Length: 287
Image 1: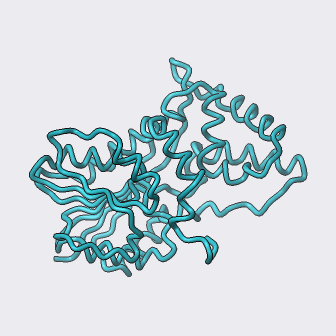
Image 2 (image 1 turned 180 degrees about the vertical axis):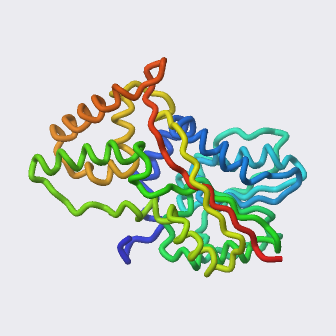
């Protein structure tokens, strides 16, 4: 991230609006990962939960339903536009109250009771200073409290990302429009290596760090035929990063190529399914 681009700016404008527009499709797409995350979190009635990088808040609302009216849930995100969308969505009337907060958790100093659980589904991989961010998250967690996060393994471990990405890069080479390839371990994939997660969280003061890769099948766009699924793959994820500078006719060719590759990866309803490897990382604050 450029020094003159703050996290709030980076997650505003078209980038945030794209996620808000696609919220329902992306939630259906990521439902299997939510299941893994909540299985690992083992939330209990009455617990206080902090959900980090919540986007439009689906995991926050789910957590609130599980801990119930005697619990409390805070959903924090850097992107104001996403939080507005999150607050506009209905919540379970029998759920815990939800507080939506715009903040950078690296420097956030909430005046609240410590949280029993800090959780996140793909909301913690983009910190400029991950050790500082996770140190601050530990500070707001009660002694013995739990950290449960879903992150992505490196890009090459997930055909969900690697297949459309590789198609774009092959077309760029064919056209002579080459670019420096993004790191397979950077950005969204920065915490996928267990050694990296252990190092970052250990230096931030968390104990008992464990990383468990959990391969799943994801329905691209929540359940779409090849052509529509190809468009989603070019709108969100690493394939977008390497295709957004292409000309309109080049994008059309890439989309057709991705759709052709997806045609062999459909279920009985004609929806594209691709393998992906989320990693469930758990730790606790020492008592």
